[in-house]
Structures are given as structure tokens and as C-alpha cells.
Image 1 (cartoon, one colour):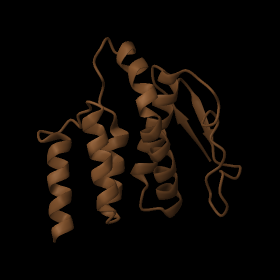
Image 2: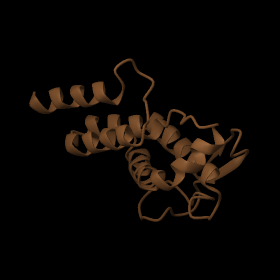
Image 3: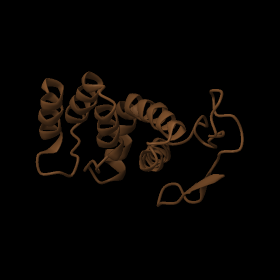
Image 4: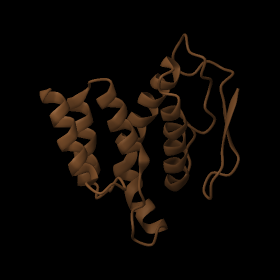
Length: 148
């Protein structure tokens, strides 16, 4: 099985799921490009596209594991990616879906503290999630779930 990522920055990037992927007992394979040095823009879109694809199948344990691993990677690398991304986008940060999807995933798994940290990091990075209430509203909804 392979996942093909196509966009302006990563055309026809193939993610091969036929080889072991860094941890045992998973159907996901080696993701070509994940460990390869590349420019920060390509890296950003590679990680975000993998998170997007894994998020759609997050009910599958292997997809959930991939989502967690790559989202953590993207979130931790984002401070280094941000300046290049901002420059590439003429000074405006685009919506970075990794933060909102990972926060949702964590909330669904009752990992509320970690979800709050992800939202707070998104705010500190100057990101918006495309919703009316933004990450601030997301934080309030997570806190309500914590209290319930």
C-alpha cells in the first residue's frame, strides 16, 4: 500500500507502507522522505499531509499511532519551520491543520492536558484554526470536557 502526496511543494511524494515503520507490529511502512533532509517548506507539507491522511483513519490503531508520531514530530519542528513558511507565504502564516487535528485527536482520547498544550503552542506561534472561536475557543471546549 502506498500514499501519494501531491501539492505545490511535494509533488508525487510516495509514502510506502510495505516495510516496517520504526516500530514493530504495524502495517505502516517506511515513509520515504520522513527521515530525509529537505528544505523546511517541503518538510512542513510532508508532515502535515501525513497527519491529514492518518487523521481521516484515526479509528484504526495503526493510523492513530502514525498520527501521534508524525504530529509530535511536526509540532516539535514547527518553531524552525515557521520562519521559512512565513517567508514563502509572503509574510502570512497559513492554517496549519496538524495543530487542530492533533488537539482533536488528543481530546478524543481524553488526553486533555496535552491537547491544551498543543492549542497553547498554536496560539503562541500565531496560528489560527479557521474556526470562529479559534484555538482560544477550542481551549474553552477542552476545559469543559475536563470538568465533565
